[in-house]
Image 1 (cartoon, helix red, strand yellow):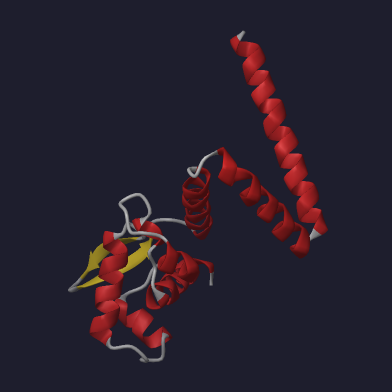
Image 2 (image 1 turned 180 degrees about the vertical axis):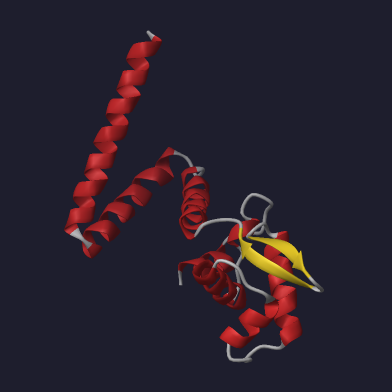
Length: 150
């Protein structure tokens, strides 16, 4: 899984701490994204009691501290809900990784872009057309911005 790759390769910093999800955290987030709101008990039952209840409590608390989950008190327990969408989370990972790679300077950019194009092409030729459209759209927007600043 993509997020597991980043967990093992990215250094922990305040800027990328949200991508530091272990296997159990990934399972829990997937369940909460599907359900919208869950208690520790809900997650415990959904995982067929394959994890200790206290382990799940700790995991949910850590996800809350990482900013991935919001929580509200419900009696003596908490109800957890996602504080970030799957899409925003995945875009954040992509942005963090690209920022890290592009920070290597101009010499590091060309191989990265070539790799992206090759990977996109392997998966779907239509995606390559979409990538081309997005690049042209961005280029036009930048040119329009430059014209308005002159």
